[in-house]
Length: 112
Image (cartoon, helix red, strand yellow):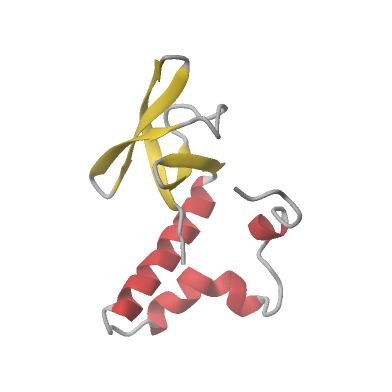
């Protein structure tokens, strides 16, 4: 399974006509490419996959993704996920068989 992680853009630089950003998450920084997200600006949160920002996301969506990742981490560590399950996956629990709105908008779009 591949997972894109939300990270916040702290700075942007252009090198040889290519935009790059320094992004952070939980105190860790890395340099990524902004080639697929030319609209991204400092302060934006982007989904990062394999060193590339693939989409700008809202703070609400970033928080939902972080909650889901925390719940998965707890499950992998053998901890109880009862409390985090609704917070991390409430959109799926409340709408079984339906994609959440942010994924519905992606149906039919070309994927990398």
